[in-house]
Image 1: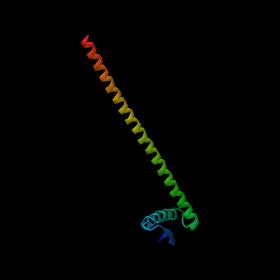
Image 2: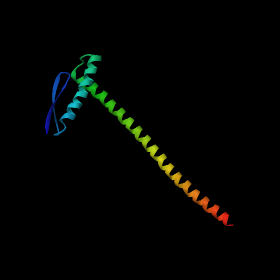
Image 3: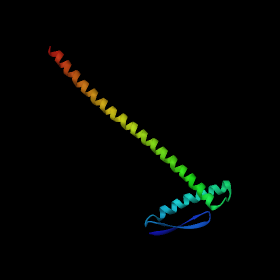
Image 4: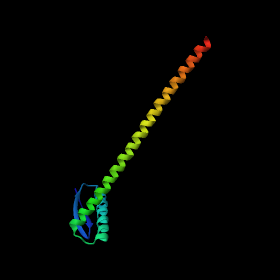
Length: 111
């Protein structure tokens, strides 16, 4: 385990993380700090707890929006995949019909 210090609203917070995750955790800390700084800029110093709650809610809203976009994109991919599969099936059916027409044309020519 490693310890990382993240600074939010000029306060240092020591956080434990798995070895190798230090840079990732620092990056997350910077995201939270940026949100808190934005809130301070628009609302002023309203207290660490309120700022962290507001920042958390904003980040949760971002995550929820990203999940929704991912789900919509996955639905589009699934729809396109289904269309492609249907197109492949249609192509196979057309090939079978063409072969059947050729058989019938050959039978008619023999008569």
